[in-house]
Length: 498
Image (cartoon, rainbow, N blue to C red; front, side):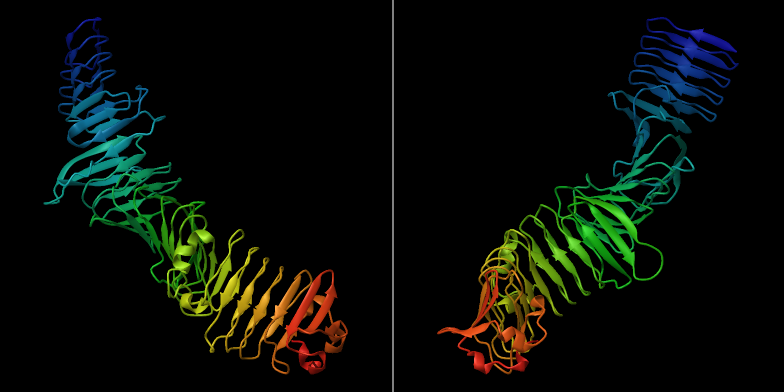
């Protein structure tokens, strides 16, 4: 066995027919192993290593080196390099420090186990990958003929970016990152916390039910399995789409970057981290969808959904089901934009967020049958006679107006004005509601809900009432006063309370 060591200059070193260890040290060296299972170490400088016959190990060292294995089963070994490497097409190996090696006739590539090493197909249109990081295998096939071009053993690699064709990539027990590329790819994370990363794709993506990712620009559809995190391109409008499935329900919070899929039956739920998504379309089940600080488009589809836009100028649509939609003033573009069925089919609720207010001439334009206000002064009107509205003003001086159905109106705190319209309406008044006025109380038809005060009978409530020029007034104490306009106390009887 030979042990050959070069100088600090440019050396040309050749081994023997035995197993040799050849070290070039500094300089731009040429090392030839010849026969035998040799170790070639270039050291510093831009070196040329030629293994010859035998199973050789080639270590280029610092610099941009040429590694040629020759015959036998040869290894390009980067374990002693304090840098991550990226294996690219045509035998190019890039180090994070800027060095670039060229490998040829190499059967195995070993990276530094403490670094994040990557296989990058560079979106090649001529080939496709089949990779198993767990089995440490990389096979490259011709995209047109399907013939095997080359295969390698790849050790200590954790990340993969595919080719421009349909790749099959499987991770290992570590935390793998798969970079999205063109083609209909199959990406399986395996154990660990794995990421499908489309941030550099340059196209929008849509995450669909069943773990599919539809890539914009006609780049194909990926199938994801055992993946814990999906990242979109921050410069694109990326969507989560439940696909109208009734087999599961979504809980999505774009602000927190979380997606939980709860199967209606069977195992689960399943949780994912989602990053750089802006829009969500729900399932056919009951979804809970929350936006982020950006401008989101959120739609519930069927099911009794809850939509909350968060900050930003959001567009929220309930679609089918009995939906609850939270609204703030940042979302006023769709509220004041004309007649739009935001609530969709079903009995839908518009819930105003704290710090916001709502004013509209016609709540029906937006497909809502129920309203819950916040602390500001809201103005809400219903026009459909076939709907029993449920309006709650919250704090603030609210104006709530029903229609021809059997409506329920609750002013809440503040000095509110309530108008039931035709129909058997219920007006709710509670302790702390301040001074409210009911403009059209119909005796014998409409009722008061005074449950908060604990009255046992209408007579007990009427004991607090007296006539005024405006109408009958109930004084419950502590500033809580309810006026029934154009009604006298004598017109009220045992049917007063709901």
